Amino acid sequence: MMTRAYLFPGQGSQEPGMGQDLYQTHPEARAIMDQAESLVPGLLEACFSDDDTVLNQTEIVQPAIVTVSAALWELLPQDLREGYVTGHSLGEYSALYAAGFLSFADTLRLVKERARLMGEAAREVSGGMMAVMGVEYAELVRLIQEWDLTEEVFPANRNSAQQTVISGTEKGLEFFGGKAKEKGLKAVRLKVTGPFHSPLMEPVAEAFRSSLSEFTFQEPALPLVSATTAQVVKDPAELKEILVKQFTSPVLWTDTVSWLVQSGVQTVVEVGPGKVLTGLIRRIDRSLGRVNIQTAADIAAWAEKNG
Image 1: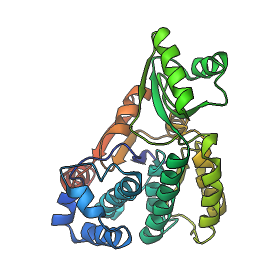
Image 2 (image 1 turned 90 degrees about the vertical axis):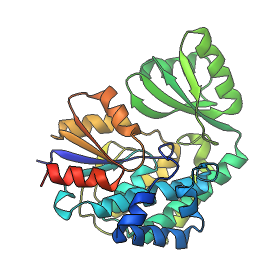
Image 3 (image 1 turned 45 degrees about the vertical axis):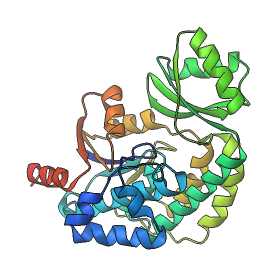
């Protein structure tokens, strides 16, 4: 039975200077990051800068987060790379690389295309995302229906029992925010430029399906738990369908964590910038051990503890 799961973060976990220590001290990480720079020029400057203006752009931040996560993964001792892998939204791409579905170069090419399409959608559809706290998922769905917003607002991330992120049109989110305030709910707009993980992304989802046909996925070495379905996916063809579905479907993070717990996982290790996912885990199930790997020092400490 696998008792460990590696979690890979999504957009929003980026931090100025991320990955710089890896690049300066570890040739394996530098090789990954130089490869990323050749595919996405300007990526390393955006990562290493104290100014996050460029880093926060969708077309830069998505490949940047996957690159830093992949570099950290490559530095983990081989005998520790055992367990389930999963990721939150964008993090699913880091996870599919860690599982062995694609090479790093192909993973980044795919992420680059995903980011381009999402940026395009953000420019064409006036909308965004909003975190809603203090209300359970079923009640949130009921409120969306009660306020007649089912064509404008959609559940996008089931992050914990008390936090759901919604996506929607600008008009829909503005109306929802006003009604939520009247009801005493906390609703905070997120710093993203589009209504991601919602039916409003359907046009770019189909464009992404066409792009996927150019990539050949391999049989994985590790089990990937998709946060789009909250199930293990092993079949490359099935994973391709899931990656298309991810554009328009919610991230089932609470369901994914529940699946891991029921499957015997006792420790989760977040690999990548930030501590967003372990923070959510703490709210979902405090019985799980939580480890963060953001730097080379974190890897050394984790390896020593498990050596």
